[in-house]
Length: 241
Image (cartoon, rainbow, N blue to C red; front, side):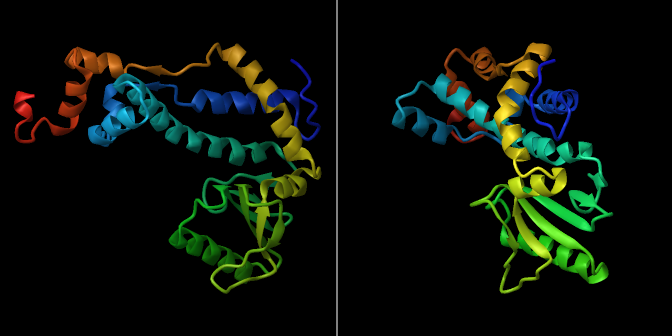
């Protein structure tokens, strides 16, 4: 195994963790999954004409978009569960906060992007943190953002509320706290392409498999007709498409 030169985590551990994430990745989509929420054939028709693409190309793009939406959650798994290997009291509990260190009284909620929480979700998280520091006067609660607007570790100002021990922290600063290495997150990002190359070679994977267009053509040689009948087969007139 090559040396990824991370220092804060072993080569074997990071390889295994990335491998587990890749194994969770969605790489296949069929017609049933594609139409699970009833696809909008009118939008796909607009997309094809406006972007100068064939309907098959637009269907493939939509298939990839659906797969990508699922895989965003897999990246959440990658970020959160990496801290299982930090040691020194760091844990990833099944319920409650995403990452905790009871010894240091640190309790973190992880979000992939700074703008992914609506007001109701943000309110719930903030109240949860307020409750924690109310019952543990040593506690520090952190909203940790992987994609933040800037590198920071500062008070979280929410709805005219703030508390010194309720923090808004970018992932680089959180890695520095957890691994005692201010460049730990940078090192991981720099090494990630090599780790993924090794994992993909080991798993012999690295492609998306979509059967959507083939299955549509099995319904009818006319993809346009098949696509519209998926959504509108019971609508007036479509029986005679």
